[in-house]
Length: 289
Image (cartoon, rainbow, N blue to C red; front, side):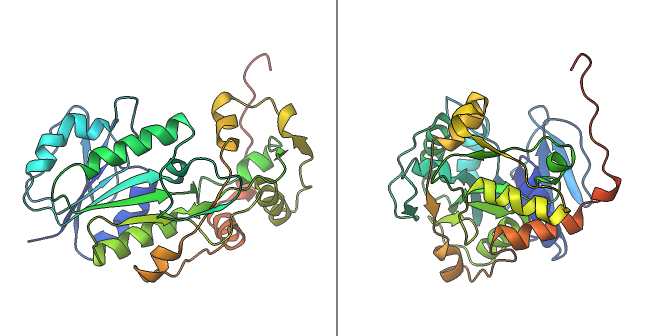
């Protein structure tokens, strides 16, 4: 049987994974809320069109949960439970399920203890997927994702970047191509029930990352802004409510992954090479601003 991956939510990560599998002769199906095109990928507008499960051997779900849980299971749970050809299912979760640890290290054996709404929703969705009997499920808890089109450079070029300082605060992060190689490694070496933290080797203060990006551009490092004076949105502030360092030893020991971008330094240099900053034009300010 030809290997077929169904990407429920053909977004940033799925777009990085798909070319790896297409090059190996896979069939890749993707869903999107809007009509989009992707080279070599069979796209389905969903919700709206039927989602085929016959012949699907692998599923990757990157659609976010809501207060009720996972919307994919609400709509397609019976079909997924009844599917007979599945060899691998990947659920993209988040390290937010671990909650706040005051900067201490966490790993996959750390109890789930979300301290934010998004973490609680993800933990609930994880449990819903885990409750499906005999499902070849693999959970990937992702750190903050960056890569081409998702880096700090455009904001720096537009003069809108701020180095927000909260003493002791660190974040873990991961380049999208490293997520893709972790997923590909798991597909090649399935371990149903496996849970993997997907992050790089260097949890770092956000101001250090932004400062390094400015240096790469040859721009002045933005001034520091104290966290309490930053005037952030509730969502942005919520990210600073969790402080932890995330270990990634399992993806190396069990999946044999060697990170392409082991720290933000290598990753940001690669992003800059992939982006055309010389032709960057800052977005126009809204009328009246």
